[in-house]
Amino acid sequence: MTLAHDHSQIWYRPIPAPRASWWPSALILTIVLISFRPFTSADINLPGQQPASGDIVNQMGFGLLGLICLYFLAKKTCSNSINALLHPLWIVMLPVLVISVFNADNPMGAARAMVFSIIVVLAAATALSQPRNLSELVSALTMASAVTIGLCYFAVFAVPAHGIHEGSGMEAFHGGLWRGVYDHKNVAAYVLGSLALFGWFAARNGRPLMGVLISVAAMAFVFQAGSKTVLIILPASIIVVSLAHWVTWRPLKALILIMPVAVLATITLGAVIFPPILDQVHVHLPGLTYTGRTDIWTFGLDSLIKSPWLGYGFESFWNTPRVVNMVQPIDLNWDVRGIVHGHNSWLDAALAFGIPGAMLLVVILIILPLVDYCRIPDSGNAGKLGHLFITIWIFTAFGACLESFFFRRADPVWFCMLIAIIGLRLTAHMSRQHIGAPKGR
Image (tube, rainbow, N blue to C red; front, side):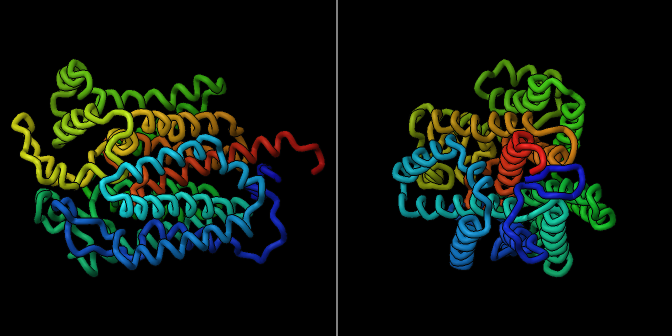
């Protein structure tokens, strides 16, 4: 394996293969980012309405995609990459997922949803393990980003009934905001924000014109989606990673990265758990509003207390009869009966897997990526990849404090976080392999 300063191998030295081996990665990235049914005709957040990813087209498409990914991982992927992907803690997470399925209100439906969630993990692993060098990875990211952004703009201008919120239903105040091929403007904003980072990475690594066009088009879409949150946390992510990049002491580097995430978690869900924190937030940021999230989090936490160890099972809380058919609590100003998710990934993880399962996810999704990043050299191709993946990681980690996407089937925001986490894992593992290899190999 080579991780030199030029455009040499990224993950491993592959068995001789035909040129343009980046196309499977580009195809997989594009499919998961846009799904097999990219256009939806109605706004979400209606009680009892299921996401489009649950229809037969997506079920058959993602089932086939899962088989393709298994083929590429088994036949086209180096054993070094497989060893990097099979971290013991991910294996420990599997029984937690199985228990959550059996604990669900509808075990068969939960099992089907869990299978699709695992397929998305396989897709991220496959997409990142196939490119043979930095140039091929850039090509795959560029192609997937360009197609996704192009379809989003097509939805807005050619079929606006699909690409723009109609201003009906429970979120009429979103009327006129862009959502592209996605079912909600918040999802679109996070995905396009991630694609802007892909574009900037491509612009700095051999695709200057296309990379800049992708970044500009993606950010223009984010503005039209009206997501103030993304417009704040995206530049914040870039600044935090830039600060960490200049620090050479690894523990301090990790602290710089994790502290902003911890602070945001504290002033969001933590502020509901400890009300004095929320009081201080309102004192120092009087104009800050969580758009009903505090009521949602309060209700979710109160429900979690009733089942703290195992939770309620996978996809068995929000938008189920236990919530939809209940009497609205008089102490809540926001009607939680029509909520699709808890607008906090950690809360929803605890509701699905129990508090111990959520704590295991903290280790897998927060601690391990930081450890991997701190093992990546700051220079060369490894440094470039580490910088990209850690920026996407902190961006989605920020988003997890305000949105729910962990293990949400083909959720493209979850996919972006997986790209970051798996990318950090592969880069760190192969960097150590390269550094430890005998000279001349």
